[in-house]
Length: 148
Ligand code: ZN
Image 1 (cartoon, rainbow, N blue to C red):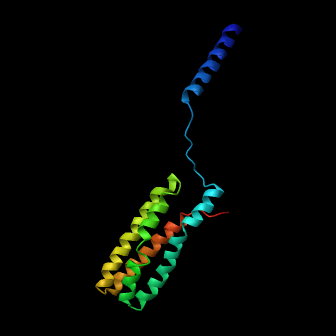
Image 2: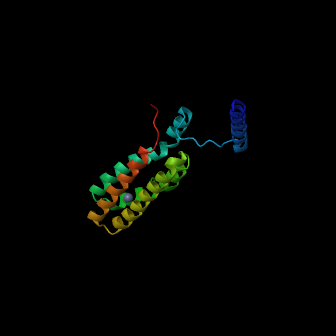
């Protein structure tokens, strides 16, 4: 009986060893940001943070119903925003990429609608699109990891 028991444990050990060696090297998907990655992202995010400042300027222009300068701002300084946000999204961890991409698309669809409503000088609709764009923009920036 003792012999069988030790035989059984030997088989178990062999089976476990076999299982472990068959699984091969595992590709590790990172789930947290390293301090180096955070520092890198803080640099990448700078043009997007600059665009966030432009959004505040845009808010002032809209409240003054300065449509010409609002549209100029949307096409000029904020014109690169879509590419910047989508590019940045791809630098995030896989777990954050989908949300970031979705928010970047949201921001841009609101800005496109804002552009259209500014051209039509629709004060109330423009204000709604601006507010929505800002909300999605800030949610996007909240996904950026910060050094603790
Ligand atoms: Zn939205």
